[in-house]
Image (cartoon, rainbow, N blue to C red; front, side, top):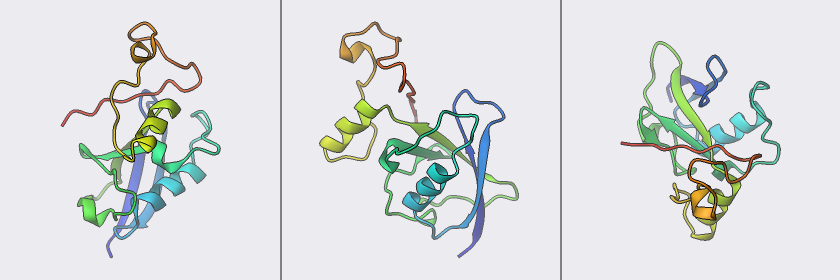
Length: 134
């Protein structure tokens, strides 16, 4: 299988990234596990985080099935590292998705849905969220 170098980009963290050299038959779960094991020091640690809380987005496509390979998602090999956007779902949203039997985006996880003011974080320790429009 073709070799690929991935460059993980983090929201609101200009200049902070991680790179991973692998091949296209690597599963999304293996990529997430590598990322957890090699999390950038400049970003709060993710010790003990479950891989299903990590969302990987490549060229506007969410890599949501952990069992599929990068090739199955048609991840492109470029002369430069292939950019992958990384988002960590808040624990409460991820738990609701898991309870619903889905490993997909769940809407309504913000503070407003939990009785807080719109736009305010529901939990100061776990307030990362993402909106992907395709």
